[in-house]
Length: 114
Length: 111
Image 1 (cartoon, one colour):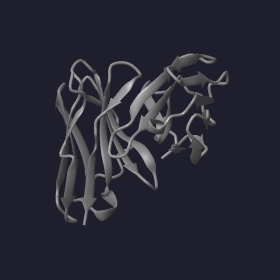
Image 2 (spheres, helix red, strand yellow; image 1 turned 135 degrees about the horizontal axis):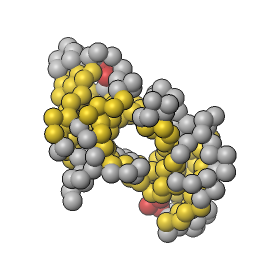
Image 3 (cartoon, helix red, strand yellow; image 1 turned 90 degrees about the vertical axis):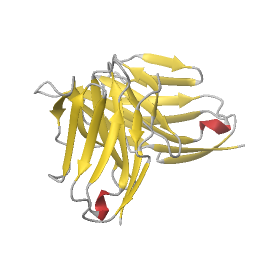
Image 4 (tube, chains in turn blue, brown; image 1 turned 120 degrees about the vertical axis):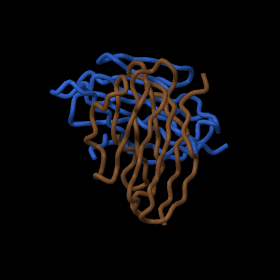
């Protein structure tokens, strides 16, 4: 199935560093969502973005909905060991038949070194 | 609320057997989604329901897969007959708007 291009695929960082990851697509989306998945768990919603250009923060997390509606980024400031996990972006769009399409990115695997 | 509840958490079965995965969405949510996650293909939407009605099943891989939602608090995903390539983690999610809440998943292994 179709997936969003998410980068980087994985990253190792030192505790306290800032992290940035992004998602791009050739399609326009109405909504961008960012999730975090811990091992053995389901994805947990971190941030939802509804308007082009929207910049939203949730604690140390900041995400933006790209102006073109084809991309989004997620930043994590001052990373801590519990930030480890897999981060997924997801785009939602409405099809010509009026149904919703949800497409997930390939994931960014984050490891934080204490 | 307890969140989205899925059962079983783990299922090991032999090829050819019928498998039924169950989901209880969050009360009040009118959308329910079934996803499959594998290393190779990532997270894929299989089917979703709105007010218990299947809206888009274009992600269902084959006729061996079927999903039902007989009421607002229960849904099943059935695989009959199962095959080794069906081995994956299957997630159920529910939402009231654009924000989906995922269950813990069912890890299916087909031998």
